[in-house]
Image 1 (spheres, rainbow, N blue to C red):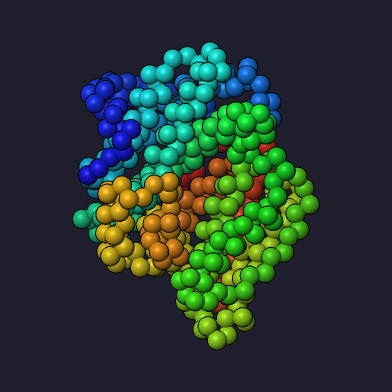
Image 2: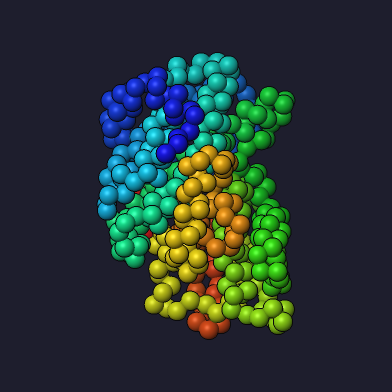
Amino acid sequence: MRTSASFRRSKRFFGGSYAKGSYRVKAKTKLTPVTIQQMHILQKSGNDTTLIKTGEFLRKEIPVRLAKQTVALENLPYGLSNSQEVATVNDLNKDAYNRITMMGEVKSKEDAQRLGEVFHDILNTHYLVVPLLNMAIHQSPYDRKTLIACPFLTSFIGSYFTRRIGIRLVMSQYVKVLQGLSESKTGNGEIHEDCNVGHIVKEALNEVVAQCGNIYGFSPPVQLVNKQSVKFKYPGRHIKLIVVELLRNSLRATCESRSRENIQEFPIKVVICNGNSDLSIKVSDMGGGISRDQLDTVWNYGSTSGPAARRRIPNEVSGKIFNDQLKHIDTLAAIHQDSLAKLGYGLPVARCYARFFGGELELYSIEGHGLDAFVHLKLAAHVMEPFDAKENAV
């Protein structure tokens, strides 16, 4: 197995003892949740004082979150903690923990910039965490159905991915603000101050429709109705990740259940509308729907009706990952050319993103006709991320 170059350097330097001696203690510390508004203050102000204070907070906070991730991965059922994929992820977590913990106090802009460089490297080397953890399920010698149906495992993965969202969001926010300041700009960051959901949905549509055309040779029409009438602050990338997943599922279901000759009769409809407290996105298709007794299973990590049920795709993907052929990837869709056929974690992860700041993702199906997906996002910027990721677990 090949690990990241940064981990190999760290392991040689620390001899594996530094993380082992401290992360278990650190994992018992409560994480400090943040709000969209707090992140936006850093993005908006762009002054050295705020940058330094935020950097010092993150220097202490991120190791707490990484320690919790590491301990969690050491306690997986069915021997998954000993799998090649999970071991690789924990190597990355320990490396990141060591690098941040060993940094001195952030007292100057130069210190903040050094911390930002470490964050940037960690963000890049951790892109494969999501597919690796799901590969562990698909490569396990235990029966796949047993693993997928395990409530503890589903709860654990939901908690793990929720914490991961928080870690990546605050690190990426800090990195982008620093990059903006180096270019004498303010306002750079993950938070869209005037979040234009219609624009985000159009970007997602362009990408997914193009993928669908490449795979199936055709694509159903997509109708967009945008009734957004309020301004609100939100991480735009989160919205795009959710919408991309919903559109992929709708396009695939429609193409596989309807014929190419009459595909124009089965459009996908996307509606964006806001009320006083929430903005909602509805994605409707006529792709045949899901039976009632199977609807809840879509929230189990690894559950899929696609080709992932065969071993071919997992084996191809695993080979590419461990031979360092792929970088900067956060989804198996970018690894395998059949980007609408994944390993069954897209919807549950999308729901983690929707719930992260108090929203929700819900599915309603009419078997034989189609499925409606509803995304609800809070308009208030003071909503905190989860105090404990378990609150967002299934």
